[in-house]
Each structure stands twice: as C-alpha cells, then as structure tokens.
Image (spheres, rainbow, N blue to C red):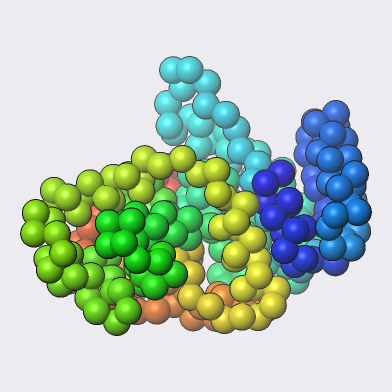
Length: 292
C-alpha cells in the first residue's frame, strides 16, 4: 500500500492496478486511495483478485510473500514463497509480456532469481529492489556523522539485501572527497569497529520508507532517467563471481525504459570483492535448493 500511495502522490503513472488475494483488504485499500482523489494527481485506480486486471502494464511490482510460521525453517519459508511465485509470475508475464518485473518480496535476491526463471523474461527486465533503501539509510547515517546533507554523500551497499551485505567504503565520498579521509580528519576515533557499527545499523534498520525507495526506482524506469541504483541484478562474472553461478544480488545499475541498461563494474578493494563473492556464494547455494 505504501508503494502505491507514493507512486500516486508523485504522479508517476496514468493507471495503478492493485491485486490481492484478500478481497476485503483490497476493497479497503482501493477506497482509501479513491477517497483521496481530490488531493492527488488524476490517476485511474483499479483493483481485483484476478491478475488479469494488470493486463498491458509497463511495470509490475511484486510484494507478495508468505509469512514465516513460528519454528519454520528458512528453507521451508523460501519454498512456500516459490510456490506463491509460481502462481503469480507466469500470469503477470502472460498478461504483460513487455513489462518490467520489479520484485520487492523478501528474500528479494533469491525471489528475483525465481521471478527471472519463471517469467522467461530477458535478464534486463527482471529487477529486485535490493539494497536501494539500504544505501539510502547508509548515506543518511554517514551524513549524520559528518554533519552534511545526505544528498551530498555518494555511498553504496551491495551484495545480498541482508546480513551479508557489503558497505563499499573505498568509493564513498562527500563533495568529491573520499569519506575515510574525511572521517579520519573529523573523527579521530573512527576505526574499523565504528565503520562496522554503521553497516550493522543499516542492516538492522526498519524499512518504513520502502514506498519512497520503490517509487524512486519506478521513476527512473518509467521516465527513462538512466540513474544509477543499487538493485538486485544478475551478477554472474562481476568481481570474480563464478560464471557458472547464476545469482542475483545488488550492484549499481543504470535504469531506464528498458529496465537494466548497464551495470557499473566498480573498483573494489580485495577485501570488499571477497565479501561480495562470499555473499554471492551464500545466495547461489540457496538457489540450488529450489530445483528451478
């Protein structure tokens, strides 16, 4: 709902279609949006429990996911989500064969891989929300430490959206100045432990701003802005990730009308590249359990 609201208020679409398996919940959500029509840009709003209502979409955003049952293993939860995607993704692909799939459901990297396999779409048209929001949080925390505006901070979190995400400190800059140098000048006690503390704060943070993050991606795609975002893309061959490992994880990617227009081959330190490969290995091992 937060995603639809933000897309609506930013006037990014002429039509928004909501789909949910729960008709009463869906009815309430669409009424909330419709009753606010006088305060918002003119956008056609439709909803249904049938995915056919999305026919002809330019972009399809998937947020559906099974909730973890107490005591349930991560693998069993993942398998239930795959079963859910088997019902959703082929239907989306059938009704909107030229759409871009944007996956938000967690675990986002693995489910983006699943969506790619099930849709039959080219890899540039299947994208996961990845670490786009993580990177925004990272920039905010750095800005707070340095007492600067977050928009002046260039910083990326890459890899898995989760515990093994990698903060790319070597390329972080503020107003063109490498951030580590700035930290050393303004925070004499800023050591490895402090840097890791910032990374952990990003990983452990809540994600109430997901609507803004996804709308940010939608804007870049639908308006062909060709901006760079850290999103989940096929990472095979980047930074030493084995060619035989088909794995999706977050890397800085240029987004536009065609989806992923290119992936930046960042210069990483050996330690950063090693952590990224370790993140990729974990994700690849999990995808192999799915039998797709």
